[in-house]
Length: 223
Image: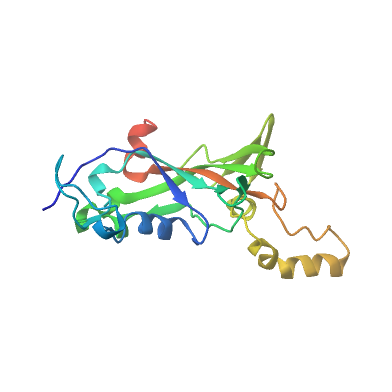
């Protein structure tokens, strides 16, 4: 027996810890179903009052249900049951300017794949640790262009997408990424050999906003 329910959504919360990037995290969310076992006390009741039975529980992503604007919340804060405390997960987690969800959409046809392509428009970054810190963002006002801006309170600075990911990916991987550049800076006697982005050691993306490419002309009233 099978029971299905369709739900519209505008945002998704993705696990960061132990994941490498957006698509693998989304694939895991909409991948293999979870086995609910009666023997473990979490069986499924087909109807009210029925005896619980073993069942498979899972979610699938359909191209028809993809929103025009997709918000991705990255789970950067974690509660530890053993210590009864919260902490920030600053693990490296990658994202790209183009997000193609066609590979994780169920029953998608070839002529529908373009409906699953999204372009990144903004990134909210958290700098600091749990309970303290500061938020700022990166924005691409013209989503069809390549110009990015960092907006930190009243300060607006033009940047490149390389600056965005260097600051927002998180993790210690940023140290090795520019090891050669740091070595040259020290060798030539200029710069501080900084190994992190604008927000420093504890900066990482917290929210990502993507816009469906096929809807850009409608959303932005483009000809």
